[in-house]
Length: 271
Picture (tube, one colour):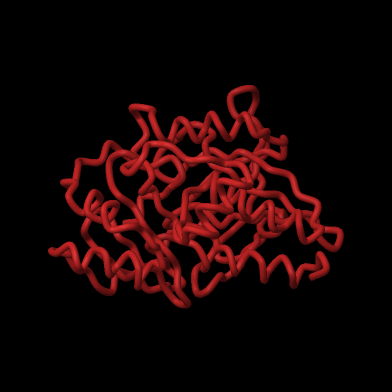
């Protein structure tokens, strides 16, 4: 597959729709690996999903293997409040233009690449996204690129980023924040979300929701509480494509829902 815009679109689509965004390892073993071998074992062999550092590193590796020049970046989630720079995205050069690739922003994950152009708007599977460049405002607010999305009829900023390259050490620190920091909401709720054509599925603790895409944002279509272990395990396997051993499913189902402390670092609160 030559490194063309069409190939970038195809790879992004495969990754955005092919793997679920999920934080279940927080509740199962409290750790994960970001190297190629660990990602291949988890997302490939064990048929699992992951969060931004896993999903977007997996995508970046696929892009590099296909011959694309890429640069890994760190972004700051500003969807609900200003979080640390703990979201990984990828800058891709193709056919003389720069594009962002992101298959791991949880509930608001872009379905397609976004061109790095001020005012660029794109309807992605029925959802409007917009890329903007915000000029600096003195020393208090340096210039940055901002990805936005239409939510309930209003444009909302999702995350801000600059074009400074990030390193593996940056991602390890961000990953550790997700797993352990008191202000991280990863330990608050078992989260799984995955888009499908025209909508998205979410499993938050034991509540399964179906969302429909519209030009004003997502609309909740259905909601169901999974009351039995069988229903919970079937949802993970059949609705999200996650293959987990029986003891892991038992462990996840047995945990009581907890009270959220706020928005998750990768906008992964799938509600």
